[in-house]
Image 1 (cartoon, rainbow, N blue to C red):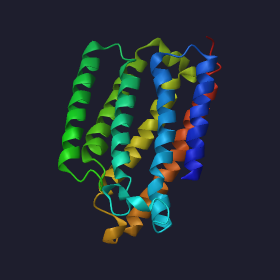
Image 2 (cartoon, rainbow, N blue to C red; image 1 turned 90 degrees about the vertical axis):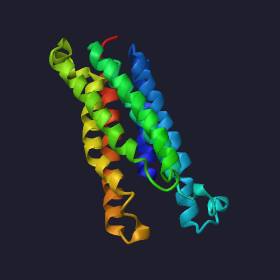
Image 3 (cartoon, rainbow, N blue to C red; image 1 turned 60 degrees about the horizontal axis):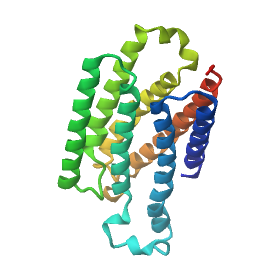
Image 4 (cartoon, rainbow, N blue to C red; image 1 turned 90 degrees about the horizontal axis):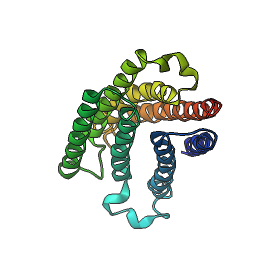
Length: 227
């Protein structure tokens, strides 16, 4: 947790630097706010690990409650995460039909996730709707972003295009981690699947390093563009 948290703070701090150096757009400001939100969630969700590894000498009051695990926080974060990225790339589109489609699908996703929260084990499993439907919607939004990029003048100035860097690393991250997040509901340490759990943890660790280092690099590089 500590190395990833450090990189999250580094990326969020680089985001503040970027905002000060450029005439940032609203969606870029929202993205930096989201990074700090991610830092807060990372710190808050650590209570489950401290409780477990201290044999509930720390945060012992959660031991016999639904909050024993931090899946509930992960589920809320997954929904917010998907919505932020859909907005971040969707708001940059000029195709009205594509925008309307994304809005309708995003609304449908929120409704489906809320229903999923009420019908599934919200406190002990990751939302299948968020890991599959949400991830596919994020990928679709990135695809629309690329299609418009190909036919625009922005293609000639990718060096300082913050959204492009974010889209590339997010595409890799989503394609790799979404299937593992979906399968984690079926392969847990409690069911004797330690190997799969270790694979997911190590993959997530590497992908988080890639994700937040890329964000940090992108903020610093793109801060050099002229106002």
